[in-house]
Image (cartoon, rainbow, N blue to C red; front, side, top):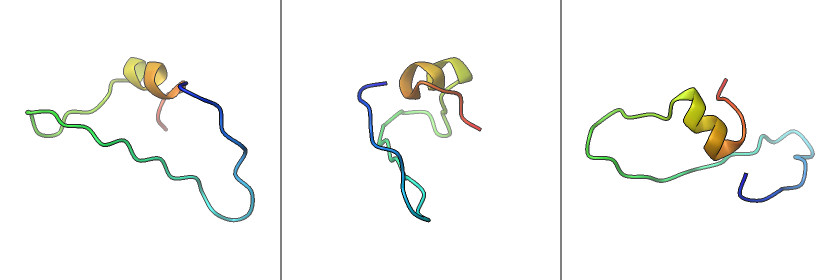
Length: 43
């Protein structure tokens, strides 16, 4: 990952937004790209 963050405390979920632009509609990361970008696969 790019950096480490503190654990989420309390009843709130952590929300991460990644803004990107791609000319083709509906493009998503593959499992391998998620692993490389976020450090884990999306559920």
